[in-house]
Length: 98
Picture 1 (tube, rainbow, N blue to C red):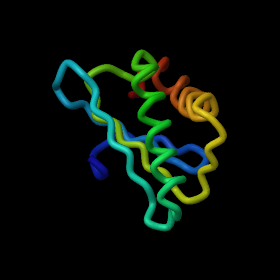
Picture 2: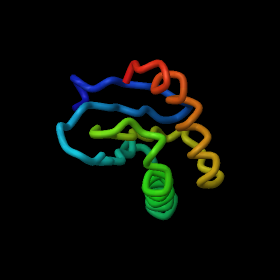
Picture 3: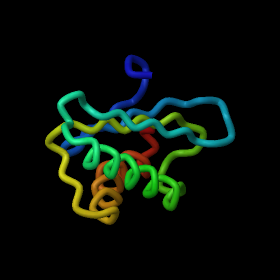
Picture 4: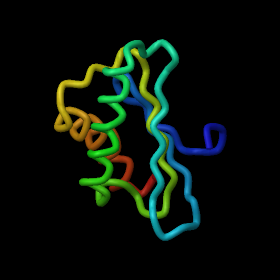
């Protein structure tokens, strides 16, 4: 996945996509080892998963998606995560590059 997937980099995170041959998407959330604080780390994961669940139509179909979060990522709300991911992928998905 990390070697063969298509990678998009955002501010404090990266999205990696790869076709999975299934009828549905799968999501993985990976946190950098220096992302300290279990409360902050788990809240970030929970909000990312919730954004994915509520906005499945924003993601290309039949893909494995890994969102890798670095320590510099600042989470303000689920709306900020949604906007960051949508802004990053909007042009790529609409252009058919993913």
